[in-house]
Every structure is written in structure tokens, then in C-alpha cells.
Amino acid sequence: QVQLVESGGGSVQAGGSLRLSCAASGDNSRMCMGWFRQAPGKKREGVASIYTSGDSTYYADSAKGRFTISQDNHKNTVYLQMNSLKPEDTAIYSCATGGVVEGGPILNPLAYGIWGQGTQVTVSN
Figure 1 (cartoon, rainbow, N blue to C red):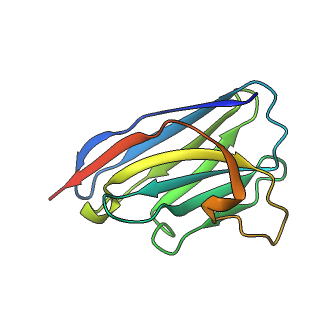
Figure 2 (tube, helix red, strand yellow; figure 1 turned 90 degrees about the vertical axis):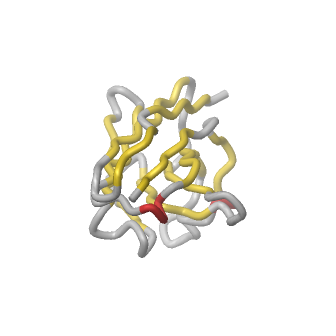
Figure 3 (cartoon, rainbow, N blue to C red; figure 1 turned 60 degrees about the vertical axis):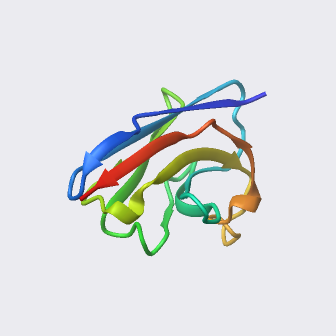
């Protein structure tokens, strides 16, 4: 069974940066990994996803130009570099792994089956 552990969350002022990490242990043969976030009172939403082979990446409109998803296959770790953070980026960020095929709903949380525990990101003015 795959386990995912996120780290790197914290508090930062608007305009600052954070780098989230998601370390996968166990046999992760899923096709893609994604970062998702959920703010209080809101639905969980996809932020960025990456295919574990080929490095194809996908971003929500809110993340384009500011966030970068990457992976280190040797370390079984996926990263989310977040720059130019805004207060509206405040949320619990979780990583997940799933078997979404190319062209499928790669930013849809319902397409992912294994989740980490999440890490809090707070952006203040």
C-alpha cells in the first residue's frame, strides 16, 4: 500500500514562496500524482498534477505562472513550488496519487484514490 507524506507547509506573507514535498513510500505504480487544496468552507480543488513517467504537467488556472510541480523519481517525491503567494492560496494542501489516463480528469480529486494527510499553507497580507 502506498503512503504519501506531505511537508513544507507554513505561514508566509503575500508575495512569498513555499515549497511543498510529497514523499511516496511503497509500490507507487499509479500513473500520476497531484496537488490539491481545500480552503475552509470550500470544495477540494486540483492545483497541479504530473504524470510519473514523461513529466507532463497540468495546472489549474489559479496556479499557472506561479506554481510549479516537479518530481524526483529517485526519491519518489513530488514537489510543488509556490511563488507569488496570495491570501486566497490559504488552504490545506494534499497530495494524491491516481491512475488517470492521458486526457482524463487529471485535476479532479475524485480521480485519485490515495491521499496524504495534508499540510497547512497560510498566506497573510
